[in-house]
Length: 286
Length: 286
Image (cartoon, rainbow over the protein chains, first blue to last red):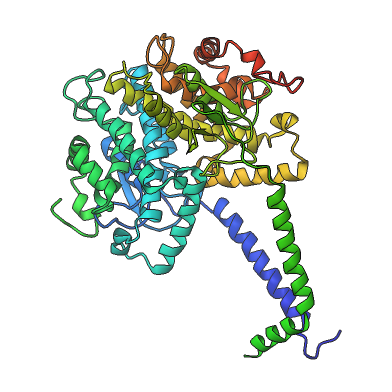
């Protein structure tokens, strides 16, 4: 074997092999992670999430959606801030009596079936259909518009900095999210087009909230005076614009053109989040 | 310092080779530009609808192209199909777009808004705000959620095998197409679920549509509107162009939606058989 000025091949080979093995192990560790990871209290949801948001309980609308649902359905739960990703590499995720579940919508559907909850039980078939469509719209469309705004258009990222995100985390997340929104589709639109689409989404929420065909009693929420699953989704998505996009054009559109949505968010916050101020980093009077 | 000297000495000793590579690249690019066909001149006062070509069993394999063309027929606006989208993509890099008297508009929804403004048409003017809100939510659900489930089955889980019979993409390219789409669906979110979960989610969306449709002829009443075009765009792919795959099996569990598809076809596509290639056996005459 010629050595001399060349690096000896064996350590190079071992280094490359170890890096490859490490990559493979890391890839499979995420999908086959050992869950549950500790003994669990019975009949209590362990809600795994990240840190508190600066002005609303989380910077993630899906964490807020699942936690709001637990409050609406009055299910006892404990927050676990372990910053660990769930089985599908997403947060939030939860454990319940040894079952591990990921994805906020699947978690809600599981709990409704398992605990025989009546959150949506009073809705007719048609109301359920309308409820599902608004939930899909909030979580699969309004969400991406908000994500594109906060990562691609908003240069200041004030709320992330208030939540102590470091420069590296901001740079990496911005790169990944911009790529994701381009893949999803909304990332290809211009700023004006994005604002028009956001306005269309808000208009649909606002007009439906203000309409009375599906109303039984006073219209405090989407389907009357009882909060249902769709309220958890819509509230969580709009709350990111209301509380985590300060002085932005989407927030101005929301406050100036759709005051009933702003009132709706405050109503959800006042009625279901009495502990709001304990769950945010920067307490204000709003 | 020594690395800069190394690079400089490399450049100095290989001037001829580097020059040859640069010249060859420039020549190739120049020839390619020359060989590109000049932009066609289109007739005036006619909407030019850029598409990828007629499909084997539905007017296009792209749901948004079927949506847009159905809409053009609904509002009875003069239009001409030009099947050149692969060579001339929209400004957003997508395959469905229009141009009119030199103005180019990308994205099916912006195209519809442009058509409405240019021709002073509005098939939705008889709807209440609440109906428009519910219709919009249904459309967004189909285009931003169900669309990804359909894409997952057609292109990822079934590896585009069935549809490739009519596309003729070579196996190696098909591999990269499938894996690229798998990554895109994971970035969107739906691709993180198992196929069984995606199927359930897709069925839940279709159940929502069927429940909302009920006994009505079209989604929002006895007269079709813009939302019907959007929904028909995607459902047509599931009903006629899934070649026995899971998308077709799923929609056939919802007879209300199947008869809705037939109704839309009868209403807006009396020349359907001339707009398809009958499984690639003949050229579409329309």
